[in-house]
Amino acid sequence: LKLAVLISGGGSNLQALIAATAEPGFPARIVCVASDTDAPGLAHAEAAGIPTCVVRPGDSGSREEWGQLLAAAIQEHGVGTGPEPGLIVSAGLMRILPAGFVREFSPHLINTHPALLPRFPGAHAVRDALAAGAEETGVTVHIIDEGVDTGPVLRQAALRVVAGESEAELHERIKELERPLLVETVREIAAGELELPAPSPA
Ligand code: GRF
Image (tube, rainbow, N blue to C red; front, side):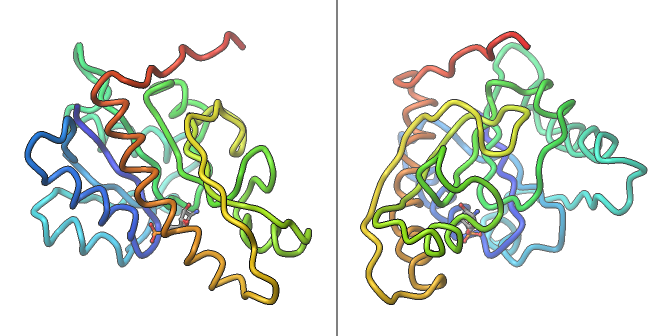
């Protein structure tokens, strides 16, 4: 299965995917890594010889246009074209994908989110969980739909919040759960062990 990975940040999830997909027998390989910015994590792809591209929203007239340019950059590598749909993995992309982009690739489009959805959607999930005094939080891998962190849940892993820990500490612990969960979910999808449901009609 061909994977395109979308990132905005340090790319530790990307790094885990690069390591896993390099193992013999892993049923998927990363064909490109795209970002909305000069993400530091792009260096992991470059070091592994994986093509990268940056499509900046600021260079487009609208969000939808940005989505079209991003889609074209991914499709150039054979994801979302031809008989095999491929899979787009949003792993720390800090932008909402526009509706046109989602429709183009749905349901072959997944995201990892650092909370137990439907609790704490949005860009500050770890902070929001702490602020709400949640005793438990975790990570969710889900299909991306047109909402913000609202698509069908595929896999989750939970942990207990430790009294007094900081947002950074909690996020780091979540990411230790997140990396293997994301890798395993991608493996299951690629191996045909986890089916991606067809999107529900609008
Ligand atoms: C992850 O926790 C992801 O869920 C998110 O931001 C973090 C990205 O981490 N929203 P990295 O860039 O993969 O290290």
